[in-house]
Image (tube, rainbow, N blue to C red; front, side, top):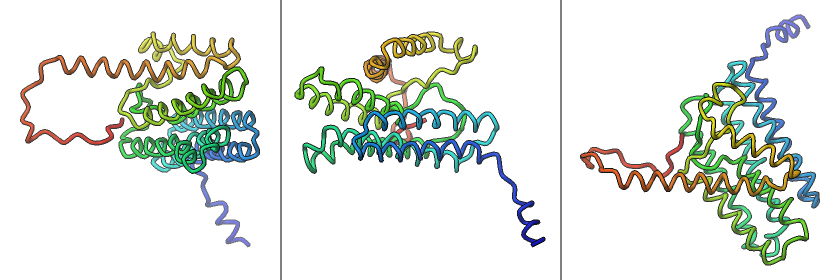
Length: 267
């Protein structure tokens, strides 16, 4: 007994367990959402995906706050995100609409989950620091999930729109979010509620605050249009700078010595 007691006393709980618990709660929320979706409780499932997003946000905050960021935490976070923000929203799309298309519907509905997995894998192999980034390459998978669930709750389930509109809109949402995730478009990270962050990106911070107020006033109905604006505006900005680079004179570079471009360039 004394040996067992001594062994227990020697066990040390590392600081990394704190953010990992938040990450596991993210995963649990995602799994619970899938259970509710299977029972056609779409609104309840949406709430659990929303809570998954909250836990996903706080695990990173806690990790940086107590200086316990690690590769293990990053991998666990990605695995949880695939379930909560990839599989759950994709299954929601299948359950509310794409089941009507049989096996083809399974494939189409799965695209956001597949694209999200690629986006997370790309992010992990390119991860060099655990510090906050101003931009992400490719639409973050939580943003994709928010776009999908806000569309389903506020624009698909209500009877205000025709079946034809819902069918077309569902396909557009799937294609748009999937392509955005695997693209090389730079998407702004959420501004932090600090004076330094506001001074660094005043326009982005102001737009974010206005967006939050608009979502609250509209009781969530403006979430989907604002997410579409986020995706489209980031895409337009990307094309603008791409065209600008094409017009600028290229430097004299020996192409034989230049590194080959990678398929997915992430930050």
